[in-house]
Length: 203
Ligand code: GDP
Ligand code: MG
Image (cartoon, rainbow, N blue to C red; front, top):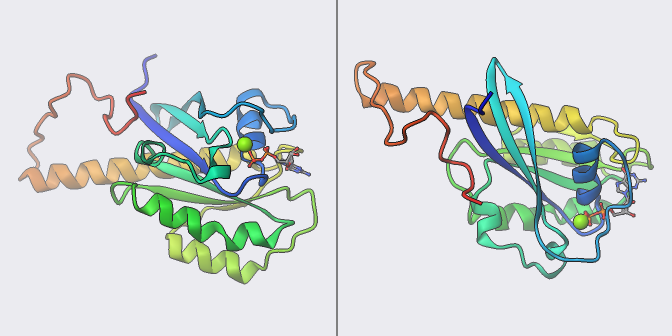
């Protein structure tokens, strides 16, 4: 069945927090060392159902370009949501998240953008205080916080699925608001011939 809705989700966070390992875990269901020698964004396409709607979601990994702060505007611009990743064993990677939030905020569009905060490597000791995590979730206006382990697989698909569901429900809410604003319940068809959402990336 063709997807009714298309979304893009990006991975963000410091080098070494486990973004590529999370990406690989979602892609293949197994853990292997995430480091890649080549640079370049990579993406996978994930199909799922939310509330009876068929969704196609592209998940994008930085491919290591965050090392040089070389993420392009386009990397952010296409995104409907982000997995914002830190390493629970390294408080620095949590404290530095604001840098990625600021970068993303310069490019992301729309009030439907959704964040999920991800504390990866929860198989290791946790050095990040709960209160800081709660405050950050408040600032990001998200309830989505997950302790995950790309290594054991703990909570990885749960976090991704919940973010996707949140993005989709926000999109539907926003669509129904615009229909209301269009006037007395009369739906004005979009220019597009199908109901595939155009907020997806062209690539
Ligand atoms: P990236 O730079 O954010 O893409 O991070 P990588 O995915 O390349 O991972 C950096 C290092 O952390 C690698 O050595 C991984 O094997 C390791 N790693 C990633 N996820 C986990 C995890 O959940 N637990 C543990 N113990 N190590 C992990
Ligand atoms: Mg990587």
